[in-house]
Image 1: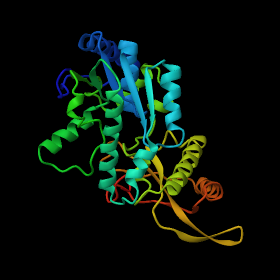
Image 2 (image 1 turned 135 degrees about the vertical axis):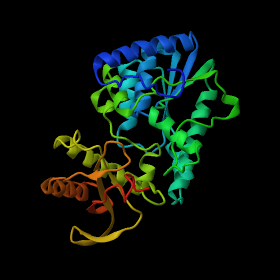
Image 3 (image 1 turned 90 degrees about the vertical axis):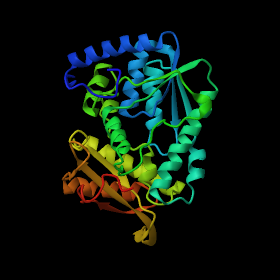
Image 4 (image 1 turned 90 degrees about the horizontal axis):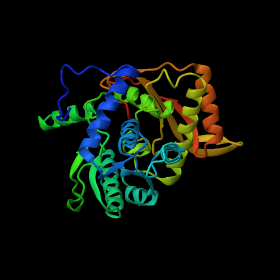
Length: 334
């Protein structure tokens, strides 16, 4: 498994037994590659980086240094959960960086989605590099690369255009060159990574966390990001996730989230005219993310979610439901 091509004979990891065999194989491989040297990992809290972190902790313990960068575009309580699972639960060597102001200041007034993605990706590298320069004796860089990332890279190398740019820890400055990369799950598909994560003992909620874009809420706070609208988005999204979880939809729907556009409509609150943003619910199911269908949500639940969001979230006065499949729409709005 040292190259970037998945062998045709490679058995898909679908059971705990196969996952444990994979973990044992990777522990041996990581220990052989790394020896007694240190490894640096950008731990986003997503499935891929979390599984890589847990696997490396099992293999080399405190030789792994994790850096979690809060870019201010995380969902509610996500950074806190990363700290709880890894620093408190797994005794990880974890550095937490709150870079909210750095990111939001750079994003002020930027409405183009690709420009937002590029700013967020570039500043993430800057923050990560700043933290890496403070550390001594780091020889390897670990990444949560999975097989679909490699397939996408192959497409781009063949001149096929990607639908949108990807967010990863590529392009580090020249003064941060590492002896090598550690990518233990690079030949796995997402469903296999989840099986491995559960075998490693990570919380089910983290292993089966919804796909979340690298730019985070930055591409769900549509148009130019403002702090008040970002706060409203975060709170509305938390209510949606809470209600889906309570009503048994969390395990049935592949991805569900709120998007908040940068325009307001007229509403009424406490008998007075009230201008607020709409919150747009999107809930889709897919097997490969190349196409997606709309999940039916019970009307009574939609009514309840609408009441909660408009009553509890300052700045939101309407709730809308996106019924567009992929194609013609993409899964994310931006």
